[in-house]
Amino acid sequence: METDVKAMVQEKALAAKRASRAMASATREQKDRALEAMAGALEKGAPEILSENAADLEQARGGGMAPAMLERLALNPKRLADVARGLREVAALPDPVGGTIDTRTRPNGLRIDRVRVPLGVIGIVYESRPNVTVDAASLCLKAGNAVILRGGSEALRSNLALEKAIQAGLSQAGLPAEAVQVVRTRDRAAVLEMLKRKAEIDVVIPRGGRDLIDFVLRESWIPVIRHDIGNCHVYVDAAADLGMAEAIAFNAKVQRPSVCNAMEHLLVHRAVAGAFLPGMIRRFQEAKVEIHGDEAVRALAPGLKQATPEEWAEEYLDLVCGIKVVESLDEAIAHINRFGSQHSDAIVTRDKAAAGRFLKEVDSAAVYVNASTRFTDGGQFGMGAEIGISTQKLHARGPMALEELTTMKWVVYGTGQVRE
Image (tube, rainbow, N blue to C red):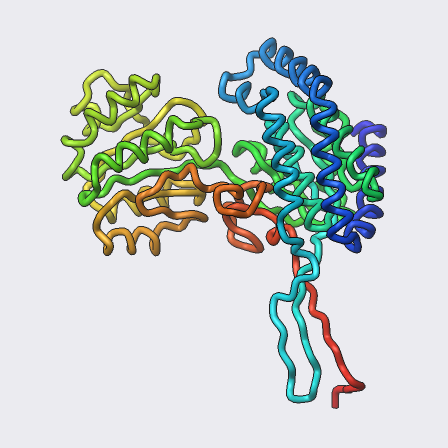
């Protein structure tokens, strides 16, 4: 590892640790003032931010980046306005820090409270989407944390322009600018060095593809909150309202195919496959969706690509959909639990018993009855902006927002008690 990269990461980690002390005691008024100032700085700096993003996009196109990834990288005036609005929405949310989770009084008179406190310093490693830079900064700040952001190398110019606006807002509110820092290099060695800074960084959150997630899990010396791929399913049950099923499946696949809560695979009970699939496939094809089907699906719609066994576990992030006919609810649940990524999965049915079994037995962070998987999102769940969708089970699961960026502390009040 080059000395300058190691020294840069060490300097940022130490500065973040110092900043985290100030952030932990910051008042709600200070944090909200910083968020409002950050929003204003983004709006004022929009021309520079969009110019830097255009340069990132040009370089990415020249490097052959896939269209789905280009879409995730791109900013435009509307997206930037949405990002600024998101900052103000986070400012309006309740401050989780200091909230009492529960309280109890013991027979000896001790009062024991459990209260929310910041995690401390959070390291976030992510790909492409520069709006994540601002979402992550806003949530970490509101929850009283400092954060070190290592975005994808393809978005470095965009992220540095966003950092400038974010730090201006922090300084304007009297908070340390080092509470939000972007790693200013494309060198992957910086990620390795981040993952070793266990004395300064309290938790690492990776967001991206499977290779990135596996890399962080393998190399990190720091606890990791995993935000894995989104291999999401919609299962159309034998008792489904087929019109509703078509609308849900189409929305889940087509509304925004490049995000992690988009449907990647559609499962259909054999009892309704003949009535449902021909029309569903035509509608997908009219929307330019490439269909990969099993033998039963291809028999109903000749000319489709053959789905390979390996791709049932794949996250396409594109206008591609795998479709499989299943014999039963049991097979649908078993397929999702085997090939899914424990992100978001839905059943469409009028059978309450089938719905109940699906909700209980599908082992995912979010499970749906008669609704699109596209709702797995902090904003849609009423949590404000999100840091991502956790697909693990410890500490946080599903959309991670303010409360999920805190931990707890036991606070004990006595009147001179000693233990015998």
